Length: 158
Image (cartoon, rainbow, N blue to C red; front, side, top):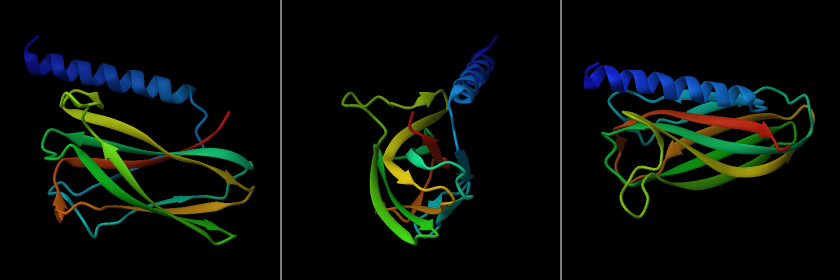
């Protein structure tokens, strides 16, 4: 096996293990949006719409990202706006996502693409609440290369 084949094989193993682990998790919603190949523009807002919840309770909200080697920074700042209906509650957050540790090593999982997961918050929802989420980056650079996907995950807190 050459180096490229080994990397491809390892990526497939990591993806398979991630899928297996995720299937054991009680997830209400998990969706990724792709960003443009030429870079994620500052005014490109990613949208996630969660249908009405069937169960009330406390939920955990996560932000996930897939980033490759061409991303030029050690972190990324995201602005997340959340609209909960029918109560018309609005929540706005800025999430600082560190991508490297103090030694300069990437903290995400992967080989050529690294996946990062961040807990945004725990929040109480009522039965029938539907949620509209928008995410955009808040970096000084107008176009961010290297971010391929941004995801939103909602899981009941057990």
